[in-house]
Amino acid sequence: MTTKIISPRIGLSATCLALLLSGTAHAQTFDPHLQVVPRTEVEAARIKSVTTPTRDFTKAVPFESNQGGAGTVRRTGDQQAFSLSQKNLSFEQAAEFSVGNGLFERIWVTPPSSTIASDGLGPMFNTRACQDCHIKDGRGHAPTGPDDDAGSLVVRLGIPVDPEPADLQAVADYISAKGDPVYGHQFSDLSVAGMTSEGKVTVSWRDADTVTLAGGETVTLRRPEWSLDNLGYGPLDPATKISPRVAPQMIGLGLVEAIPAEDIIALADPQDADGDGISGRANMVWSSEFNQPMLGRFGVRASTPTLRQQAADAFHADIGIASPLHPTPWGDCTQAQTECRNAPDGLSPEQDNLEVSGDSLDLVTFYSRNLGVPARADVDDPQVLHGKQVFYETGCISCHQPSFVTSRLQDRDEQSFQLIWPYSDFLVHDMGAGLDDGLPAGQASGAEWRTPPLWGLGVTHQVSAERNFLHDGRARTLTEAVLWHGGEGKAAKDGFVRLPPEDRAALIAFLESL
Image 1 (tube, helix red, strand yellow):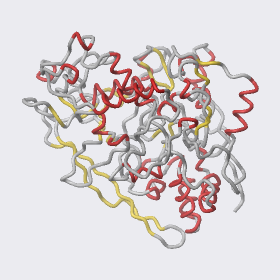
Image 2 (cartoon, one colour):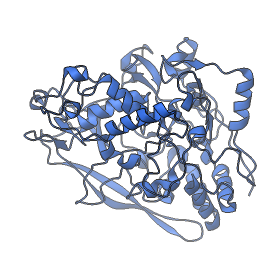
Image 3 (tube, helix red, strand yellow):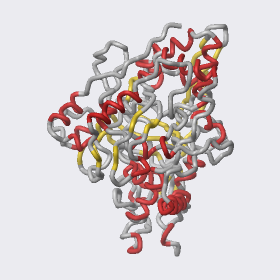
Image 4 (cartoon, helix red, strand yellow):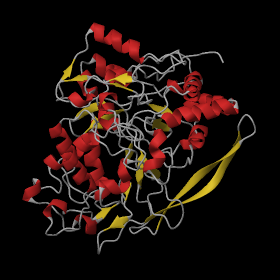
């Protein structure tokens, strides 16, 4: 097999370039208040050297087994594989992590109640605790049948809009969809006693396509057909699109937040200037936390810029909890849902006249930021090394960028200047009509999805009873996940289909080692 290493892509989107040239590069960092030490020329050269994809597949790259840098945790053989704190936390930080874990697992109750610290659920919601979606900090799953609920899945709603960009600082430039006029931005399938829920999420599965791989193996892909039934407040707007999404795993999020924005943006090539068929884009989104545009890093469409905003958004839409970033106590209820907006709430002076105080939100954010990445397995195994070579040579690293070095941070030593191996470029890519749900997010279209990090793939089965992949859990195996790649991923998918069986098996072994 001829070695062909795909070079990192170059180029900036017009929006990103305009931000850089206008002197607002700080708008792309994960927190304008964070103290980032600029890299020296010597450091930049070292970083380029260690993050350039290898051409030697006879042995593991130094430190490759430490996927999460110095904070990498042991690879356990049980369901706790994603629930360990980064190994490099101090004693005080470990205690803070434990308190945040308690809040992450807290079961919220219907207001008013005597339990002020847990008061404020709903009025309509999807789950009563963060942990109920991110079970053991792992992935959620799509309903497997009529008797399985959508407890670890949410359905986003929206009507696409097409604003005319005029001012890069205008919020409207970063809004691509408005909520359903009655049901809002997220469908709530649960409600407190006495309140009508919005309805029930159901899915049926049908065979979408049968693919014959080189060597004769056949794989049947399944396609979900989603339905929102028993609607409690009348029909959806005819223009409303629905986008079901399973909860993602929680590991390594603080390390992703610490990657320099310019390193992610440098991989973008929206016009495919290098002609490799890959045109990933940075999703610039509006930060309600800092009132400025920022680089989106989190979520299936990279539509959220910071972990604190992600936590606040989940409290708001998933549980119906008021926080400093979403101070209204009725969650995602719209003006049309007057009963919901007039329901009792859990606002209290003890919680800063909110339902989750700023301090509590910070603790949950700290917990989310510091869940450790498990060590890689079998990095020197000959089959795994061969599978890595196949992964690189079929062009998978055009999107799944192997490694980064995080920023040097003055106040987050645990994420500072770490060599990490997420295997993602954190850009959004057009994945073709088969995965297009028609609902854009920020500057990402309905066919564009963020490249998911691959670290932890090999222990997903230990954490999650249902090991599903892709944004809506349609892929039951890693092979199915690859075969759903279209658009910019089609060439890599086609190369996978043509691989001899032993090469495909090696590639899967490599993915399972992550």
